[in-house]
Length: 334
Image (cartoon, rainbow, N blue to C red):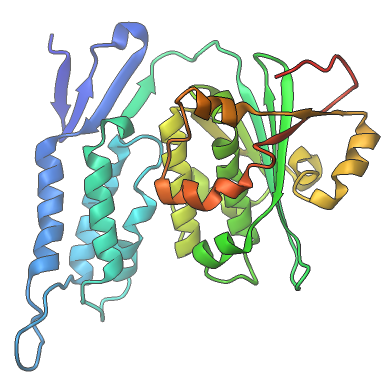
């Protein structure tokens, strides 16, 4: 029996099925076909140019709808939900039949897709048996208030069931990230919630890499964008792409779930001004967590979306600060 077979343009590698893993990726011929269709749209002359040399690039709503269907299927062979949000230009064109000009967003989409389809690191890996390894619980939250002193806090709480250690990280979102990544600075709570979710995997890569993660979020709009890998809002779609690329780089098995705000423990570190009081009330002990620094020193370094990592590097508090939550007990070192 062949170890690698092609089904409907998707390659299926069963060589490690006896180890409980099957890997999928898009067949080269199918990749070439969809990229050729995009290139034809990008390079064809405008049909309605009045005089002189006709500019290049146009796509009809019907073509966009067809391409979205083809590429939507193609992205199912990628890890997690990688690639789905990048199809937003096709969705927008499919619903705007009066427009036909090739856009800069379409060019970005084409370049991005050609990169992710060619990367072996982003192939979909399916486990045939559920892992018995202890899971990691992650809670994330964000706080937001308008005004010059408005709070834009991010909070992450992590509990590693394998070591029974609990950590948190807390930081106010830098203005530079808001200006660069968010469209409307006055209504960004959903974007901050997604940023907090992403920050968990940037701050604790050595805890979350290769692990089963149960990730709880109390904002349904942010949760939906992360679960589906798509949002109609451009900045949330971009944040969703960054999240899934980061998860893919860590090969983490993440299950996203809703938690009511009153039950979300990450609400505490998302409001940095309340940390000291909360620490006293819970009887917790402060601990310095240099996990990410150790990970980088060992050569592992954060491996994600480069621009995302550069923009969010400041989210590590003290590289990062961590706190053991719960009852007072032995203060074990990291």
